[in-house]
Length: 166
Image (cartoon, rainbow, N blue to C red; front, side, top):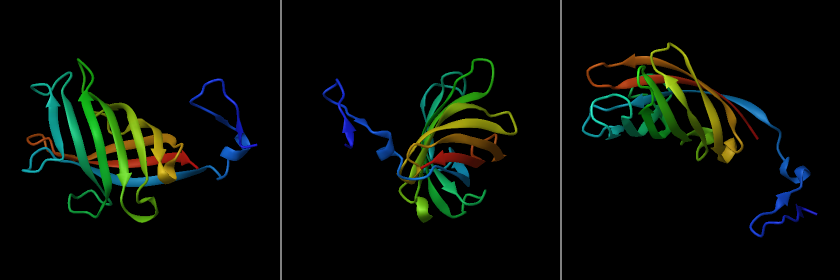
């Protein structure tokens, strides 16, 4: 039997032996996040708040690239938002889905939700889910700012992501 009955009319429980059809593995992803606020077509737009400070929120559709330069090969998009979440510090709340468009991960994505203390050299944020080949994903991202332009707010950020998935 594939399903067991549930008291709720809208759900059914799967027998565990049916759900484990693929082996769990760990994948290391390495890419760069290009956050551009300064062009005619910015990839990050302020949607809430005045001056950069507590509560200021940006909506993003940033390129994910193979290398740290803006003109590196695009391998996906980072879509979501980040907000300044600390009153007396520079910490962001990141709510982002990384959707990949190249190679075997084309059409798959991972979701990250966490605190990004941007003044630290290396930050760690949790991977909380995924889709496609990253279904049931969990893991962490190690993040390092490669370059940041204080005048424009533009940045290139290196991501080393370690994700467990089926």
